[in-house]
Length: 349
Image (cartoon, rainbow, N blue to C red):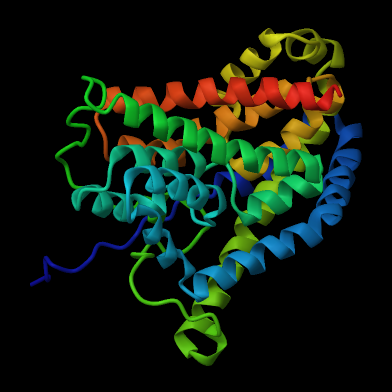
């Protein structure tokens, strides 16, 4: 008699990033065989150019995971509400962990009474910047752009937290939580940031190499993130080569170029559906900038797209009611447009 309590074997799921990487040369072989070699060479050269930044990102995240430094995030949700908003925005702007991994943590914070304002500040800032994202952005779009995006992430978190605090008693934010239990989505999302277990249990140990289990965690995290960043960036650089070859620069310049608010607003609107992955988006933006996209539109694209991407959106949708989720998206779009306008003014100086 079969034991009904046994866990069913996991079904194999194709990794669509690797499928796309293999499919691009095959499609080119059918329709534009002369472009196979230039596309592959472009992607490999671009990947090699950002390899130092990739390695830094991989080992930085591995170190932070192995030391259990994410435990320090809980400190952002202690004290007075105003302090919590500031600390949550700062923590979100530097945390190296994916949005869905922090679902159990945020659920616990809300359950014990952490204000939604601080949680919103963290949610808005968290998907926009982390050490790995900073390294990749700096290597591809420049250090200035990376710093500006990091500052924008923190300021948008502050903006969202303060708005929620001011409107806490309104119908939008009253009784915000769903009653359904939630769990981490990392085991299915392939977010490349860890095992998906509770990341906030235990203590911090900066000299992790003295502990065998932490050494294993470091090794596993480095390998996992190497594969994750490697596949997405390789795919992104191949897409960048195709964009530069087949998308007329005039189209991009007409829609997303020039001065004024309209290209920035369009960048925020286009960012939501086009933003497949935070790391893959960076080379896409580089290609669009080369084709004539304005600096402000580029900034609004990465801000709005980062917040609305599936892992970040799932983290919010899993816990709060639809009206709070809509407010989250609305705050992100407004913040993205303001960030785009501000960065465009700086870039034109």
